[in-house]
Amino acid sequence: MSAALKAQMAWVDRLIRHPAELSEAKDFPELSGTIEAARLKAVHRSTVGLIVSRWWQARFPAVLATLCHHRPEATSQLVQHPSFEDALGEDLDGRAFVAAVQALTDPKAAAEGAELPPWLGELLAYEYLLSTGLPRRGRGDSLHEATEEALLSPDAVWLSGGRLTRPLLVYPFTWPVAELQEEPGELEPDPHTRLLCVTKEEVLDAAPPQVAADVAELLAQGASGATIEASDPDAAEALEWFFAEGLARPE
Image (cartoon, rainbow, N blue to C red):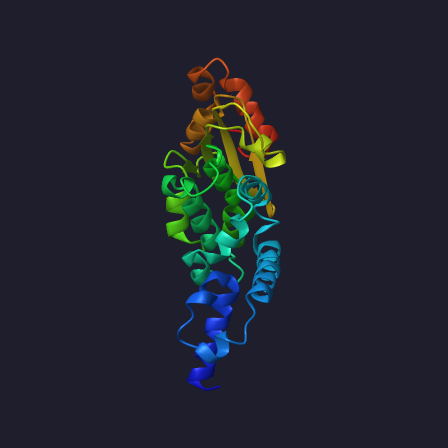
C-alpha cells in the first residue's frame, strides 16, 4: 500500500468522526468532491453508535445515559476528542473515555452546552472502578496510571496486609453513586465510604458500617480484636462485617 493511499484512508477515517471538516478539506480536493455531506453525516452517526455500543455502553451505562440526556451530541464529542487516537484497542483501559468525559465536564465546556450534573465526575470514577480499574487489577492487566491519577479521588486509600485477606480500596464518595448508577437523577449529596475489591474474579462493592474505614486500617496494621473494639463503640459490629464478608482473618 502506497504512502499516498494510507494518507487518504487515514483522512477518510478522521472525516467519518469529524464530518464538519469536509467543508475545510484541502489536502484531498479530488476525493472530498466525491463525498456527499448528508451521507457523510449518516455514516458518522452510524459509526459513533457502533463505537459507543462496543467500547463503552456496557462499562459506563449511567455516565452515557446522563451525557446523552443533557447533551444529545455527547456521543459524537466522545469519539471526536483527541484521546480517541490514544485508545488501547477498544479503549480497554478506559483512558479515551475518561479523558473525553472529563473534557466535557470542564467549566469551559459547560459554557458550550447544557450544564452537566455536579455528581458526574464521581459517577465516572465509580463506574470506571467497577468495570475497568478493579477487574483489570484482578487479572493482572496493565492500567493507565495518568487516567487513574486524574480520575480517582486523592482521598481514596488502598489497604492490604495484616489481617486483611485481600487488598481493599477505601473510597469516600460525596454522592450516592450506587443509586445514581441504577437511575441517574436529581439526588442530594450523601457523603459515605465504600469498600471495593476483587474477589474470585468478581468485584465486591459494599457500603459497610460507618466506622469500617477505620477498622480496615487497623486490620491492615494487624491490630488485635481488643484494640479494634476499643477504638469505637461501633467497631465490634464493623469487625464482624469484615469476617462475614471474608475480608479479614480472625486472630
